[in-house]
Length: 134
Length: 63
Image 1 (cartoon, each protein chain N blue to C red):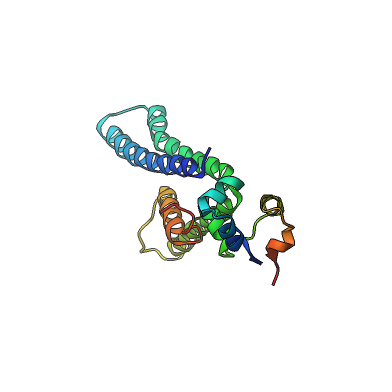
Image 2 (image 1 turned 45 degrees about the vertical axis):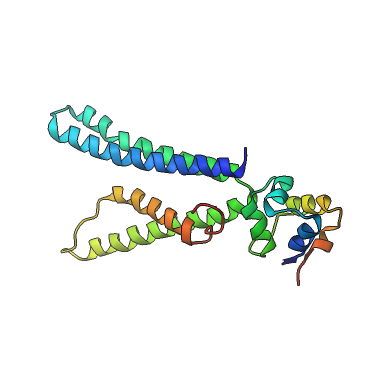
C-alpha cells in the first residue's frame, strides 16, 4: 500500500472518528436528558463516544505501524508533542484546581479533544510538518 | 550526517517520488533524507547503496 493511501486512510479515520465522537456526545447527552433510563443503560450509552476515541487511537496505531521509517520518526515526535501538551494541560490545571478553590472545574473528558487538537497542530506545524499531513 | 542522495538522484534523472518508489518510501521521506533532516536506518542505507551500486560511505558521510 502506498504512503498516500496510508495518509488518506489515517486522515479519514481521524476525521470520521472526530465527527463520530462529536455526534455521539451530542446524541448521548440529548438522549440522557430527555429520557429516564436505568443506571446500566445510562452507563452503556455514555460509553458510545468512547468507542470513537478507541477507534481514533487504533487508527493512529495502524498508521504508525504502516508508514515508512522517516514518516514514523516524525509522526512519533508529533504524538509525543501532543502527549506533552495533554500532560502539561491536565497536570498544571489539575494542580491549580487542587490548590485554588475559586477556579472552574474542567471535566476529564477534555483530555481527548485537547490531545487530538494538539496532535493536529503538531502534525501541521511541528516536527512532521514536511511529511504531507497538511 | 551529510549525503549525496540529491546529486546521485539527479544523475539518474529521477524525481523524489520515483526514488521513493524504488526504495518503497514516501517522496517526503526522500526529501527529509536529502535535506539531512532524517538519517536513514542501516537497512535503508544499504538499500540506497545497492540501488546506486555504491558503498554506503560513498553516499553518506559523518562530516
